[in-house]
Length: 70
Image (tube, rainbow, N blue to C red; front, side):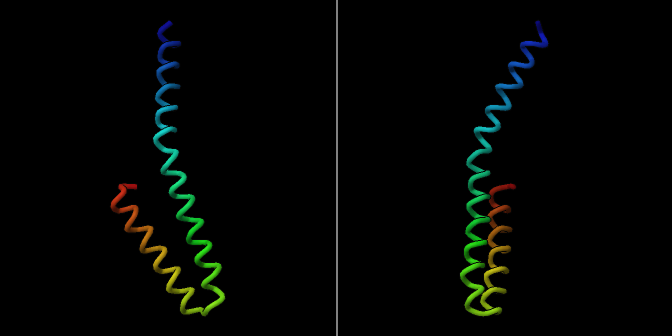
């Protein structure tokens, strides 16, 4: 009986964690997609512009991770 209660509590906890993690996953995917799209469009301008976008994407990601606590 106790095993069944613990399993139900774990599944509830897993669901709560998934609900909390969902927006973070979507944010990370959208940020990655934004970097890919930026890289695609800027790659047609020049190699210097492409290098600048690549560097700024890494710096932006590091700042976001620093303040978000990821």
